[in-house]
Length: 241
Image (tube, rainbow, N blue to C red; front, side):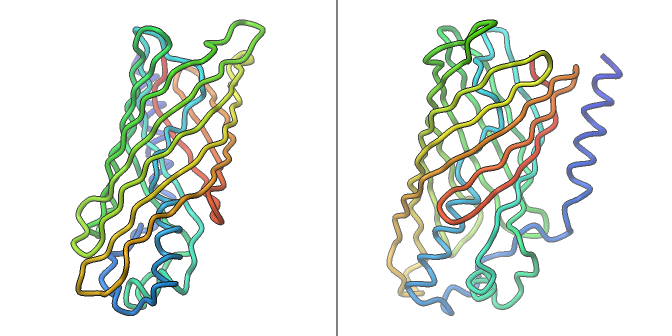
């Protein structure tokens, strides 16, 4: 057990060591945006912040847990993000660290949640999911599941954001490796404070993703997705049993 904990800690530290000091900036210059710019910002933030479990499809089972730390990196429209941050957005990605917790329940149901906070900013996120295994999978057949996810932006005075998503995924374990893939749909409501005279945007985007889970006593997962026009890559380290 001690070796397991050390392995998880080492992977978690490795994930966070590659993150630059600034993960994302505060959106405090929204007055510089046109309505078209605000639409692009809404689409970009929707792609970066909607719910991501970074887990394979197989249900955990009634005694199962999946606990881990992740980092995701999402492509950005640099010109719009720079305007929204007063010319101070100095990264080519939106980088977010997250803490994930998943718990298995009876009847092939899993629930999960994440919390994210970007140090040196006022940006944080909360999210939750519920997933049902349509097929739980066997030694020769894959698991298929459907998931509902929700997330909300916290701590930003001038901007509110809420996302809801649905996706269908499939995975099949082979020894210690479990590849998975899914398709989904994300709807995000983004609203700026009234002082900026920007209309609320309701963004709808299709999502496609693939991932690979490796369980070596400690658990490591990588995932890539395309949501709308933006690509996100992520990695998670933790414990899954």
